[in-house]
Length: 400
Image 1 (cartoon, helix red, strand yellow):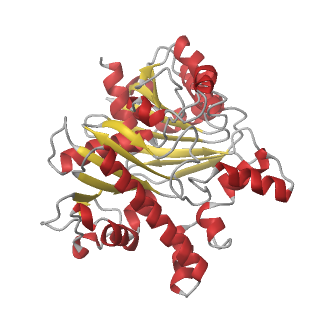
Image 2: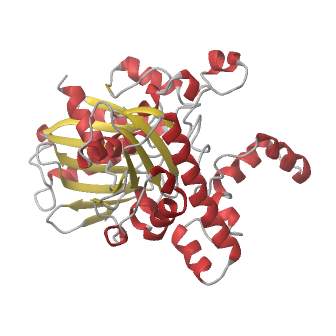
Image 3: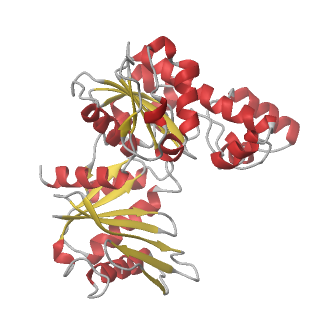
């Protein structure tokens, strides 16, 4: 069965077509500049030449039509017609307090997605547009919403409530939700299988380290805690996001710089993190690493602070779960930064009995165990695959 995966942005649409039996990608692609001059479709069918076309896409409905035309084209298509598509899976950022797992879309689901626009103003409106575009293009096909926040909904009150007046939670559902949930769900589940752990009791910490970064703790695949909060700004130091910061620092800066809270949040989201700490070198960890190797102190300090923050969260989550069986590194930095993995483990995690096998760790983006045989905790390099996770969830929900 073929599962069509859709990830809609405000002016973009990423897609994959996955065979649910072999779990192989049949085709993938990207629509860019939807509703803007210079719209472009890049379509990559597996085993065939890449196809690109610049053509007007006034709306996401037009983009979906172009994608379906490409998927069924005689030259660069991979299916005969859209009847070969079994179901459509959508990445949806926010399900609020309502949805604790993926769900087949109906009018009630769309209503909740709308109600969460203020919690996910950049993503939820675009996600809903993608759902409705697919409904229009393929009437009657089941659409499934896979929420990025669903994984964190198994957290207990002690983990998700903020220590502020409870009235704000009652009025606004202001709480910690966590993000990168689809990745954490996929990697924690794969880690249990890879390390041959008890699927009901395994204590797993997933380090999703990229330009956006987060850590999760789970027992038996159920989230105990995760580092992002109401928004993706909380937690680790990231490419451009500050992560955890004393809220009073914001008032101090606003008062001294003569800026308002919206400008301050823009600084915290887009001008901070590794970019800000390094003195503006880059938000790309590779560029900052080069600068550090050349002797730039601010660059080295930024990277050390990043690794230190990761290690602090790992330690906190080991305490929260009263132990840890496996630690998995994933996403751009987690999968490809050999030095960061080694230093995080060697400099900080020895008390847990973590030992890295330097030879096993000397790879990028390859699924493997990187801990030494006598390590008390399995350490894994485990590439994430959010699209496959969405495909699996879509099939599971439709076949319920």
